Length: 175
Length: 188
Image 1 (cartoon, rainbow over the protein chains, first blue to last red):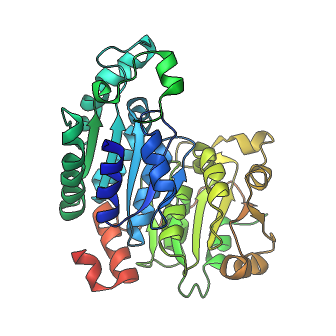
Image 2: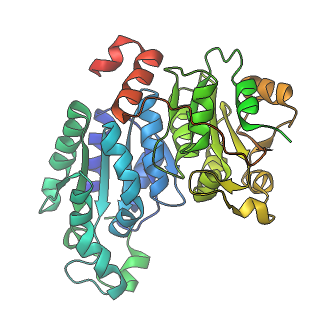
């Protein structure tokens, strides 16, 4: 499944810190990172903190990744300016809301603006179309970020995550 | 009352291998006035992120002591980061707030700490260890006391000449990594 495949890519790329704000779509991947002894999962109180975490870790020579929902992208906008100005490598894996079949109208504005906002702040956006494309896309994002000192986001489509109702959200285990 | 430049100069005396992050604004100028170093990372932006950069650095470099020096306004913008650091409990990290109860870069408007907000109490509630306020003892704690450590030091609200570090972010990043990690930092 795609969370296991992403975790495999993160481990192979020597990712040591995983900053995250809890999210239903990332539930399984967060658990995999928490139980991996080679990684440290750092729970954040808001996504913006993750930018500082990643930057500080890179100053100290370690690689990290951020996991967040599309609504969290709105919380990191100004901090992305620091990533760009300093050319810190950054990989952000975003589970999308506000897309196909969204049931919560409050998720739609930020979900629809996610790509625009990221690109406006100098982040390269990759969007795999299917579950099978996710791990190769994360692999490419890690290489682009850490070989070319780029900020790269991978948007995991809501269609792939499959949350369709409040009931699904509460019972979803990350597939 | 303390003068900010004297406080920061004292805390950075004989800093040895200490790694330093300074928050946006006056504290970035303060650490520069005390003597610029490649092992200092002064922030020119990212208000509210200084403590989190300290956390990332402390987790990446567990054998080194890390000091975040920032202002009360900058710390207030990232209060949640105190809770996040409290969860991680990095023993090598200290956060010192130079508290003039003012937003110094924007016209000396009062911050929340001028109206009773107690940053030491917030940090203690998040799981930080308290530090002595006497400066020599605080400096010793920064180098030796198992953290995460926190101290807010009240200073005079004064406008003083700017002492500016290099401005370019990529340069500040590269010089820090080279000084810490050696020449191989350029090729990993």
